[in-house]
Image (cartoon, rainbow, N blue to C red; front, side, top):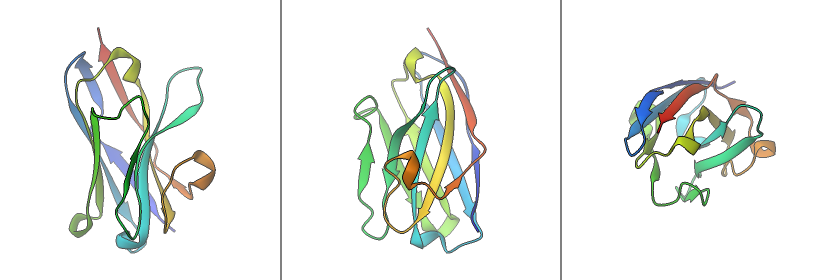
Amino acid sequence: QVQLVESGGGLVQAGGSLRLSCAASGRAFSSLGMGWFRQAPGKERDFVAAISWPDGSTYYANSVKGRFTISADNAKNTVYLQMNSLKPEDTAVYYCAARKFGAVRGTSSVGYWGQGTQVTVSS
């Protein structure tokens, strides 16, 4: 079993930055593919970014490419999402996601979910 706990959400003005963190426990972190999804009110949960295991390849949604960066610290069992140049349309609940091996590229590939953290970008 894997437990995921997100932190770092909040309210920021457009153009600002936030860094989300997701701490994993319960399984060897280095064997997990980790990622982030987001869900705005009334919309589906969408893929944002992922980092795969074991090769460490990164993947991004087109809407965040060049603005968001996903990274992992194996020593801390934590994955990060650095979000720069935030836009009001980035407002959503952000969910950390994980799976055993590989990469979380879609909701059907996710084995474990965090509880979510709210990100609100004001215009």
